[in-house]
Image (cartoon, helix red, strand yellow):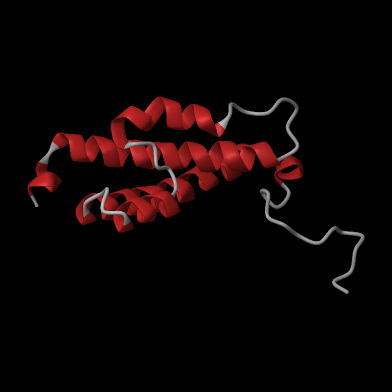
Length: 117
């Protein structure tokens, strides 16, 4: 529990939140039909990696936890921050993208001229 009181812990959790937000924003944004693409997601990991390890993905955090490379409180903080960051990033992208460009926000969907069969 001492870890929860350290500023390094909260900086790392905040870095995971921001990294996940940018990951969702840039990753989903790259799948839309913009003119030039946004910066690469690897830029996010390089920028925030020294603070929290740059997991930016719950699957990576879970793998680190299972490999005993991450404490349980830190893993739970990272997972919560990553989920909230992804939701915030998708919300920001939805808010700033015009409707015709937005489409399905990268969700795989059946084309308008194609039936389900």
